[in-house]
Image 1: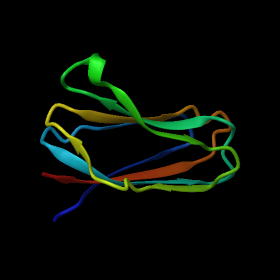
Image 2: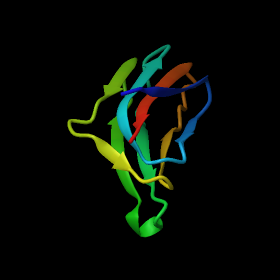
Image 3: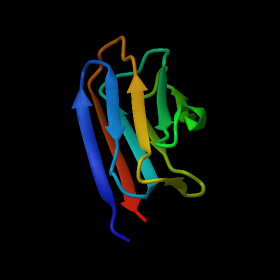
Length: 106
């Protein structure tokens, strides 16, 4: 299985979309913050290609006091070719972040 990775970094709000355009599965999400996070949520929301009725929050993690977070699904999370994963966090204390998303085509 060949993994693909998408990365983003910055010091403003996290706003990242994974949209491979093929059927895929989520393998892992890694977040590193340069300082302790504020009391806010990192979310990973499925933007379903079949329509908003199928959108679901997959990841919801409070970043208060953390500098590292790793999300690994206990079972594969399958996505259709038109599905996207939207990652977001307000990042009010503007710490520098590095986020990596590992996924594979199926």
